[in-house]
Image (cartoon, rainbow, N blue to C red):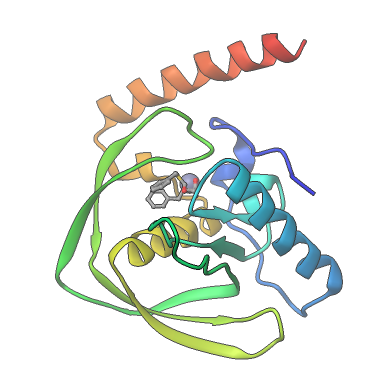
Length: 174
Ligand code: K2U
Ligand code: ZN
């Protein structure tokens, strides 16, 4: 089922998430719920802390070409084990900071290691949008948001707008 996405500012988005000790059906269901929530947003990635669960689990599907088969991935305890010196700049957004975008520079290529939903260790090199997305999601597990890469003025401007948007959305719900 779809889960509500926490909006910045929220202390839970700034905390480090705990490693997954052992894979349970509850965690597999959480991964499925996160994918459903991500596709509905729509987005191409989502981290467990964004739905209020401080566990090291991310989901992503960065296939954007229409007509291409979706490629949903769930990664437990993901870690970047190597990254290129060469960097990429991408105008990033975040489902927890709606309607705000800014350029973020990140390594172009990353080698990622994780545990999949069957409990098997996986390792893969990622580039392009997949590389940007997986780094954005793993940052969420460390309590880091894309605005943390910006200067203080731009970060404060975005946070002030986020506070305003959060109040408006709370009023709509009331
Ligand atoms: O973690 C999230 O908030 C999900 C982001 C992931 C993301 C942000 C920037 C760059 C790559 C991935 C959402 O998918 S934001 C929506 C979006 C959709 C398509 C392309 C980029 C961002
Ligand atoms: Zn995000």
